[in-house]
Amino acid sequence: MKRRTKWILFFLIALVVVGWAVGAARTALKPAVGILEINGLITDSMVYLETIKQFQDDDKIKAVIVRLDSPGGKVGPSQEVYGALLKLKGKKPLIASFGALGASGAYYIACASDTIYALPGTMTGSIGVIMEFFDASEGLRRIGVTPNSITAGTLKDAGSPFKPMSEQERVYFKALVDDVHAQFIEAVADGRRLKVDTVRQLANGRVFTGRQARAAGLVDRLGGLDDALEEAKKRAHIDGEPRIVRPDTAGDLWTILKHILPWNSAALPFRNDVSQGLGMGRQVRLDYCIP
Image (cartoon, rainbow, N blue to C red; front, side, top):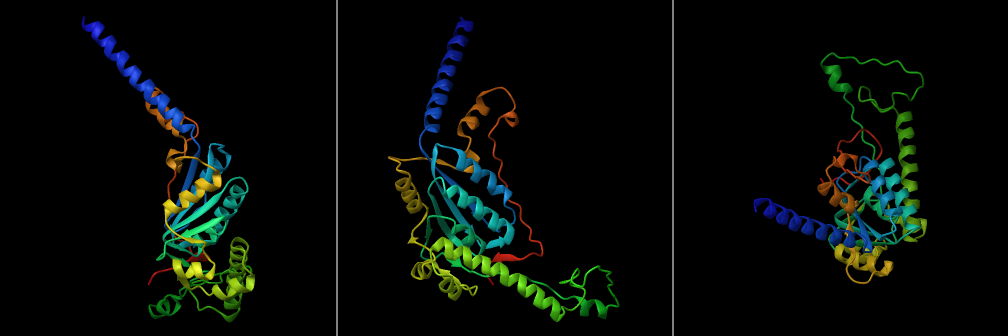
């Protein structure tokens, strides 16, 4: 009798599990909107590029929203994410949505999208570039420390904190910053369909509220993530509520199976472990610092 009861219990549990798995599999087949979140300082592109590629290649994902709440960050990663999103936009609708902050490098990335949403009080813009150096030479001299360096090339130790910056170095770094700034302005002009001269007037590093940015043509609409989702649904011609896919749920079916099947989940394909590292090197940066 006990054995029979165990089999009945096992059968009922199996039915529940199979029913749940079938329901989840059906959900996984629904048209979806992918949401890529970019929060905090942008110091690395690899944490985003894999997700962008998955969203681009997954035919069930009909549109993508990039949700930004970031002051910006390093130039290279910002440009790499921007370029990847441009490729994605060639295949499916791409909407940008700002949270509290979508400035500098984050704004650069948003310019890859079809439409940019900002809240009325979002801090955005900050179309500028910064390089920061410090000069410790006087402090070292006072404690009797004299640094020495041997270089092959007059500018190899340019920007060293152990000596005052020369005029040659200042001109050199200014040219670097100006060139990156020009690239930023060109990206904004292309993305926002504005004249370069118009963008240049706005590109002195200042920050705009979402409402000011809307008036200046830097964002398209005022609204939050829900508004961006509604537009994504319309552009993708999705009827009803779409399935929402984020990086940690991009492999919905595998996420389900790894809890059911007996093997180690690390062996499953289509995993997407996203993490963010912080830490800024002394590099050219696109960022907005709140004093």
